[in-house]
Amino acid sequence: MARPLRFRYSPETWSEQRVRHDILQPLRSNIGATAVAPRHEIGADWTTHRFEMQNGDVALFAHNDEDGAYWMGNTETPSSLWRTEKFDWREVPYHVARWTQRELLSTLHEEDPWLADYPHISWFFLPVFMSKDGRESTRAFFREHAAGFPDAGRRETTRFFEDFLETGALDEYRHVMSGKLGTSDHVDRVRMSAAMAEFIAAKILVDAGYDVVPEIEVTTGHSLDFRARDAETNVLVEVTRPQPPKNRAASGPVAAVRDTAETKTNGQLAEHGGGATLFVDCSSFRDDAWNAVRGEQPDVRHRPAVVYRARPDGHVEGYRKGSVPLDLTDAIEFLD
Image (cartoon, rainbow, N blue to C red; front, side, top):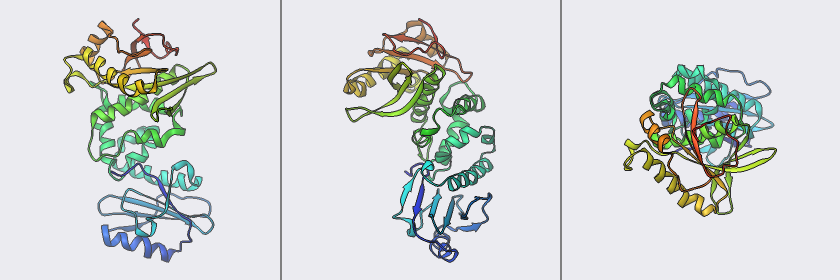
């Protein structure tokens, strides 16, 4: 499975003749590539190329005499670039990153016009929305599966995440966070919904006034999902998302919450040795399932813990177990 889109960097000098010989010709022979005019200007002293394949793949190439060349594509990589080093979007020259994003965004919105109404979603998830293997499945997850929310439409759920990403709270961590959605060639709703649970958790923390940093490495060799910080707070947060009862062997929603939290508690959190707050996200539950949980408020065998359900209109309600070291009253309507 291909990873989210990254740049390949060649420090060598590239001429127009070399581009045709080492890039266009092999791509044309293998997958029917055509060189087309780029749709956007790059600015500065760069020469740009756009290649489109018969199977819908696209590749971009920018080079100049001083800075070498950068390649990005959701297609096969020409052999002349096989051993080149890979770089993230934030690690390449500004003009190259901006031009590449504009080229790919125009293609994305041509193929899925409805996403043009959500510029931050389009930009943030561009590395997977335009990836080699995951471009169909990741877009379909938002378009056809409401990003994991039950009883909701694609536009209200996409707006929920658009409004959060518009804050810029996760911009610095775009590559790692967008990559959580994956680049599988099929929609795995359970796994993808679990990935979006981390975005919901981040939104709750940001709405409560905390800065968030994802993927915190701890001494056990594991990574916990977030560090939540403000002037007086430094708390580790781990997120888990129970599957809706109809999708699992548990006898009901209360058992689903208990069992899922227990798996997390006996595994990653047990090895960590305590000190983390567990977020149990029940946003995949329909009303009847959540009502059973909110009525009983089952223990989750880890303290401190917060059990909650978010809805696309922004309303979040839940309950706490133990002494939660975070003030979440601005983000969650607590039942307790």
